[in-house]
Image (cartoon, rainbow, N blue to C red; front, side, top):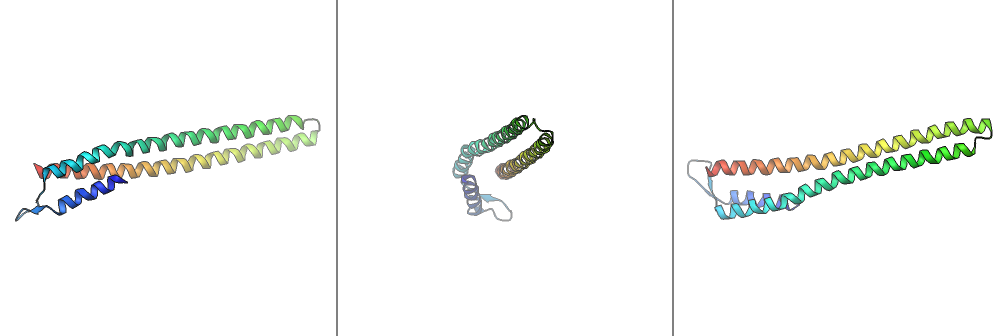
Length: 145
């Protein structure tokens, strides 16, 4: 991710700055600092777009899982109707329908949970990056004042 490279550039800029004697302050080139910050501002929307894509992809996966579950249920119902002629076959069909529905619901829940965990992990990482970037900017503004 380019954001990390830019953050490293920011750290290098701070690390390479001239130390102010008897303090923890560092003198840095304001123009270079502004350039890196501007690049970060330009790259952040890409990170946010990626997070949005993850959210939309998660929703699409959930919808696909729901549709698949509905298709399985419909298929089971069709099979049951065709087996209704014989009472024993009808009982077997009902039992099989319930197993299929239970299996479809289980698969749907697993897919849903996996998708949510994946999206949450990506969003959590993005949140960390944004917090780190904001902390760096905040600290740099403090230093500049």
